[in-house]
Image (tube, rainbow, N blue to C red; front, side, top):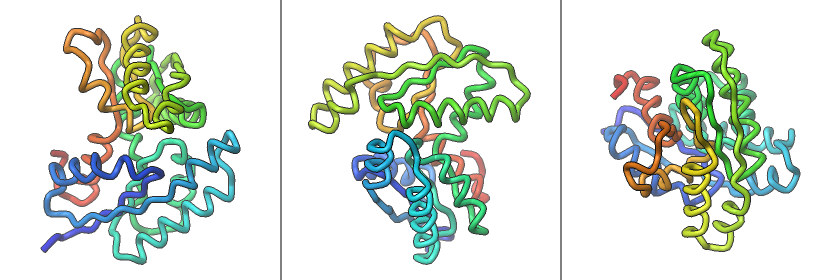
Length: 224
């Protein structure tokens, strides 16, 4: 029988298979269930920023996941990441941001860090998280932001090929002379895996795998 239960809170059902696969790999003895509410990200995009009402709804969903038996909740959307900080103050069990381990890793890889996103509402909180991790580690960094315009709209239209092409072009052509690149959205991770091995000259960090692996440590299962 599984010793722990993890709830994965998504703002898109598209991410469910990816995280289910990662949990199978890194948390094979953990029971998981998914909570999906697309309105969290849609309302944030419409408003242009994370609203208080969305933070309240996020906190309520986290509470509902705990009521359903979760020992920890992993929030997989970076756009609503700042709301996780609020939810943490309300509950005694772990509420995790998927992008925190990625940001923590990035600040130790060099001074110039690129942050790539397809949404302004994700770019800004991810950059803020990297800066916060740098302050905590007493590291001096420079952030180079890149907004991959048109890629998110392509996904909404079902054109994942265009999304992947635009993100790939941004990685290989627009983001140079950096020590590392951070992908602000979990959905962008597959683009890196599909690029030729010699296409990238800079290390690229994404959040899904490191985000799941942090749960191992939280549950006392080791770092993997």
